[in-house]
Image: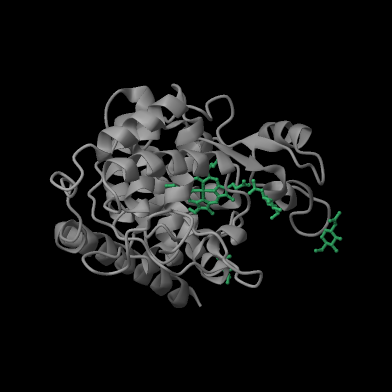
Length: 332
Ligand code: HEM
Ligand SMILES: *[C@@H]1O[C@H](CO)[C@@H](O)[C@H](O)[C@H]1NC(C)=O
Ligand SMILES: *[C@@H]1O[C@H](CO)[C@@H](O)[C@H](O)[C@H]1NC(C)=O
Ligand SMILES: *[C@@H]1O[C@H](CO)[C@@H](O)[C@H](O)[C@H]1NC(C)=O
């Protein structure tokens, strides 16, 4: 059995290393080609400025809108690629679209996307995809307080025509996922361990519903207990806010949840990750090492930028695939 365990560890190390290496090497080739930074330069030169202006008018100078749009973009990309499918409304009583599988993606973010789309359509009809709008709006909302672009967004995504709740359920990790489940899902998407740790840092902004963590707080093993891996002081403070069956929301990164920073990683090493998925990032030696590296904010920002670029290019539709929706809520 001893051999088995060390062999497994060895195999995991190999898989992680090979995965990491090959993605570093392929980065340009795989993800750089289809999308282009200046994709709309000739066809809709004003698009990016319109998006930035609408976002900044709505964002103010904290990450509230940024949290909504960043999560929207992430969910869009993980389910059938970044194709705007998260925005589609159901068109019949029986159709169950991605959005209906979401635990409450806020409506406010959708309003901002609609406002952008209306203005962009007025400037250049049926030219800029909803998928690109979401990608740019998320970047611009997070970037607003910094006064500089926090990551680059290559463009040219096309909008998909399929949106299924079942795809969302199958492709999105859950707050109670353990480390191996998370890594498996990310690797399945062409992302690696580094991307998993860096992108989870998005949980430095925004809020969660108490229901998401009620089992972890109140009935972890079915005996009315709390997950023993949470710092007890933190657990008490979250419980005080999230009583059993509470419909409250709780900050993901207490006192800093509207600021995009590396505070998330400072919480993790203090056992103050909100979800089991967050806490799991210190349970694996490789990922724990990255959590330590991201105690440095510049190291986190630099890797987050790279990983966002990769996530934003996942399984995208380009060229003649898909369509450019006239209205982000409806197929043409
Ligand atoms: C690693 C696996 C991940 C899991 C298990 C996960 C799970 C969740 C859950 C359960 C919530 C709270 C939902 C609620 O109760 O309302 C949430 C919120 C959020 N997630 Fe994640 N997530 C993951 C990765 C990501 C990634 C990769 C991003 C973006 C790059 C992201 C961005 C966000 C943001 C910004 C919020 C706050 C949204 C708001 O304030 O409305 N998450 N996540
Ligand atoms: C939140 O989720 C509930 C139950 O899934 C749903 O009825 C409600 O419409 C959602 N609210 C928003 C703002 O999406
Ligand atoms: C992680 O979660 C998966 C899926 O829920 C489960 O099959 C697996 O046994 C878990 N692994 C560990 C190490 O707990
Ligand atoms: C706690 O979990 C157990 C086992 O899953 C379940 O039988 C029990 O009803 C739960 N208690 C509460 C208060 O939800």
